Image (cartoon, rainbow, N blue to C red):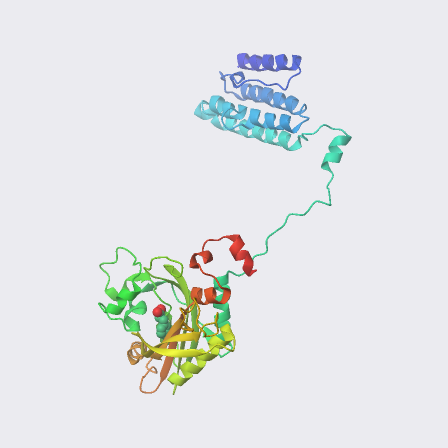
Length: 391
Ligand code: PHE
């Protein structure tokens, strides 16, 4: 121990004599030969003194940084060396004593660094610290709704004004709610149009309980009806998944807003009036709608809704492929088979007594039309130049 301290003192004296920054090399940390309290106090005390003396001479930022590297440098730093030579080699019974002193030394170095001004103690230093109040401040960006969220909220608001409430359901859905209860029986070819990812390792479960990423928001129709007897007026915004190749207008993950209205005497005319109103509210009062026969397993009859082209007013342009019309959503009268599934939990869904309509629309498609966006991928890329336009 004596040896080690004298080595330290010699090194420090040599440096002092040269009035340098005590740039002792790491070889300057000798091995300890004794680990009793007195020996440790001496060894750590010598290092602390060296550090204090060295810190008192730090008058430039570069010197402060050199001091930091010298003591705290990850590989070459002295503390690292102390840890290797003194802490790790300490006999088990002395480890705690070495550790405590090591911690104190480390805190001292950090304190010295905090206290080091880095600049010369002169008038110049004060001038350098003065704040220039004419400099621009730190600009913080204001957050804003994502265009998809905004469009979803706009659609929901149109229906909220008609007395609809809002419902949501899980994105990881069972086969029963996503397909079977929506009248896609096992093996039905309509399932092929909505291929999706299924959760692995469920082969031992009955098909109806197997989990998948929902392909549409329609399963929330059934979840809602199971929870409440008619009348029901609900819109369901949410994220859906399909095995679709991504291109300019398709994404395997996208968003829908579903609608469901069930009551006595709900007719196809109510469906037409509701959607015609909604399209005018979303795209402007001059927009016209027309209904084309279509097919969905859960509605009968089913229709595709087209609106007059909002780009050319119906005259025909590139956007509407010269037809003057743009197809926008699917809809139809709720199929009695769907009511039969709901009636298993809520007997009031008796198709002889009630009727209803449902509709579903793609949020991305509507947002792309409203804002003139040609690439669906722009919504997901997180490019602030794109998103910033919606603030
Ligand atoms: N769920 C259908 C789809 O995703 C849309 C739809 C909803 C059609 C409700 C009719 C009624 O394609």
